[in-house]
Amino acid sequence: MSATFSDRAFELQQQGCDPDDIASQLQREGASPGLARICVGDLDWRGEEQTPQDDAGIAMLWLVGGVALTAVTFLLAANGGKFIIAIGPIAYGLSRLLRR
Image 1 (tube, rainbow, N blue to C red):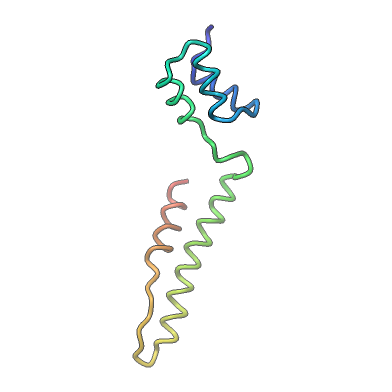
Image 2 (cartoon, rainbow, N blue to C red):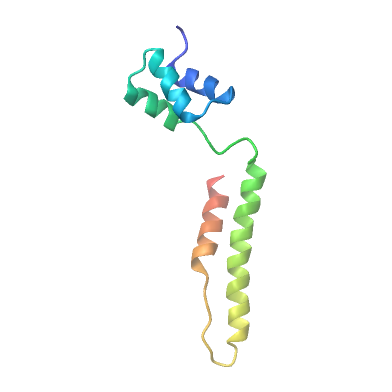
């Protein structure tokens, strides 16, 4: 067999096999259980429906949502009240944008 176990795992994933089936098949073809788990774990299981543009859109939603929450609460607290600085959503959105 000239293909590696990783290549075989990818091929089985493309055929629609689930992770357990792929690991079992790799073991039947001679991979150790540990190697089979590693090969299955290295596969990208996000699915084909998520594109880089989708990821950028989600990142922008987090970023804009965090900025909007901060701005709205700041405006509501203009007379000396407390406001929220949404660092978490802003940082998460930025990190997803920069990860691309």
